Length: 202
Image (cartoon, rainbow, N blue to C red; front, side):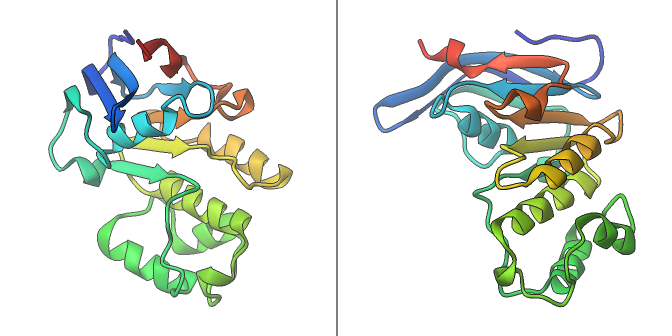
């Protein structure tokens, strides 16, 4: 079990998840503390992304309980993953305006644009996979939230933007809970605690 002395934002009580008749993981019990950085690790197909989706409220476990320290959970979570879709018919300027109507960013629009270095009047469908990935990361990193969830954050990023991710994620508000799903040590080397999902297979 992961424990700590500060405020617990997410508690997992013996959660289990299966697809069809196959159990992905069983009886995961953990606490995730505000201000800490956690890595969920394991081999490909071990359930890392599935657990992160449970933490994000995207999917529900088949057994066990997920407890959050607050109501209106989705207003307190920022999430980024390579498989997450963007509204590709919009330009970045249009997406930015849409985002501003539902969530508040921690930086100004100009600073955001300077960070991502993307053309605001270009439709997202015309961005490369690496451009889309850094855009997803930027919206997660720079949206005001108590919890930051990142799945395979450096996927499709080149060396320059991988270094940008590593620098930026380590500079997030010290009160935020950060959880990273990855099997690449460089993506989570700065984390305080590692949770190997493979230990919950039986």
